[in-house]
Amino acid sequence: MLKIVFLDSTAIPKHIPIPRPTFEHQWIEYEHTAANEVIERMQDAEIAVTSKVVFSRQVMQQLPKLKLIAITATGINNVDLVAAKELGITVKNVTGYSATTVPEHVLGLIYALKHSIMSWYRDQLSAKWAESKQFCYFDYPITDVKGSTLGIVGKGCLGTEVGHLASAVGMKVLYAEHKDAASCRVGYTPFVEVLKQADIVTLHCPLTETTQNLINKETLALMKKGAFLINTGRGPLVDEKALVEALENGHLGGAALDVLVKEPPEKENPIVQAATKLPNLIVTPHIAWASDSAVTTLVSKVTQNIEDFVKNQLNT
Image (tube, rainbow, N blue to C red; front, side, top):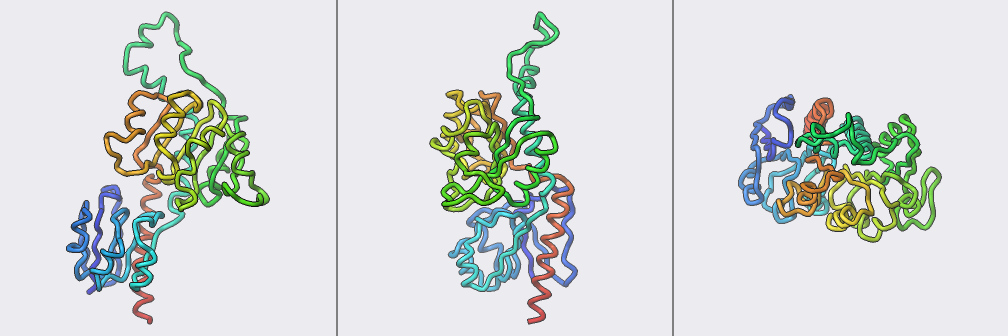
């Protein structure tokens, strides 16, 4: 009987049932697993299910029975893939499950930024409107989404769908070429030109050595004064301190982030600190992917990955 251990089940909302594999197995589930608990909990287990638990070479070397790491997400940065391959451990992730919900989240953030929604909302936590001499007031900028230019970094499934939604509401869409590309592909615009032309830049590229801190002090300075930045990709794509500085000095008109460098963030995180005082900084806790339909698709694909792996193992 195969032993399957889900190490961080709170990565899935409790109201979404996780389908169990059809083959005979033992299923053990933990809400959270600290780094020093992984080896003990994975002893004698052939399959690990996890979202963000780190599987380093050192950890995997101490788990001789481990054959499959089933990731309940797209990102696999938490697994040493080179070591996994050398040790004969298969790593399976899930893609495409958030192709609707993430682009919708991005579109919502675009409207929130362009219409200063959070600034108006925060005012309602006080008596500002009630004390107004007029039926309304005009303290914050409101600009049209239609006719504005959206720069998209990353033209995969999510970036492409964001482009479709943006075009549907009348935005001009530019897809950025790789930052240091020697030439520009058809359908793309040079990276620097996208930064210079876009009213809004949204990030949908993978996190790699070349994209870490892609948005930094230098690239932020290239963006139009008053432009907006949205990141629903990976936190380390953005230099957080540089972003806060660009917001505080007024170069950027606003930013919306669903991901941070460290998650959950520390209370001293510069973005967390800035969000308490900057109404043009919107932070959501890495939930752009988490509509009910997306999570249902995700867990079904995770189970299917396990089923397929076991079936292939039995046939070899």
